[in-house]
Length: 389
Image (cartoon, rainbow, N blue to C red; front, side, top):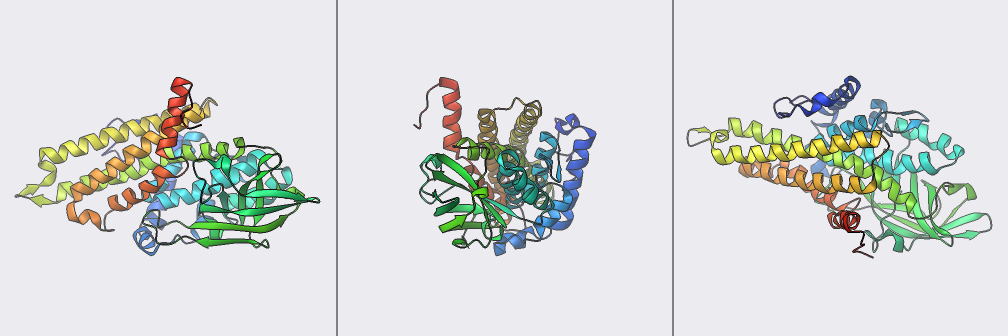
């Protein structure tokens, strides 16, 4: 179906978009349909995402598109959300590559970096000529990043970093890693270029989720960096957490694309698959599934759109992003699983997308804040009491 998907957009939600937003939606949709969609089942099965896709996303203008200056598009929050939606309508791994580049790697340089750091990296990253990654999570510290063991000590004017980061998207193909480490003064962000002595990346294999995505483990063994490798504009957890808020916004939009694709796949299958002499779409149980899937999708789309308008107005808060991330990912998983049941045995093959999306969404449910952590963040906002400290 088209990017607007009039066959499933019964609430005409996309009618609320501006002409420019629709153009961005359609442009990204067309790119995905032409360049990625024909290959994504094979990439998923092989466990790869070709690096050459990153420069193509740069030419498309979606890398760091919500940032201004330094070669970035300066698009609005809703436009960025729509790009994430159309990328993830294809595969979560494709959206993850773009959002890690723009929201987790470029954003901290843009927000907290020096002018020299911005000028050196942001134009190349916006073009996709340089790939970035974000090193926060560790093998023993995911939801509690404040307890990270990676540490940076001063040695004269230099910094020396040691530690390990885990589950790092784009890690082994990155030209620059934004690594967060403890220091005597608090947590700081460091720019670690590819090839720095003591810095290595090893890919994580045998994944059953986000297979069309590069996931790595980073090792820092007495990595020596100059004084100007540190991001000067922030100290403490505020730095990495603000980056995660940016990325979670993209997830809240992106998963609605995955859910929409699953609904469309289920409808297409149901109206052509015949049992007992008629299409299975004519059975009440099938129509009930499709109706509830559509209702869940509309709710998620409206939530994402509302959050986008709040963000454009400068009033979106981290807890509002948590609400959208938690709610929309859970709805998308439910839609993907329900779509798979309509496809029957065919639904467990890569010929159809729902099982692939369902597998991907299991990882999306966990990364960038588990469902449990977002639930407790919302609970704290409601009660004023922290349940995890």
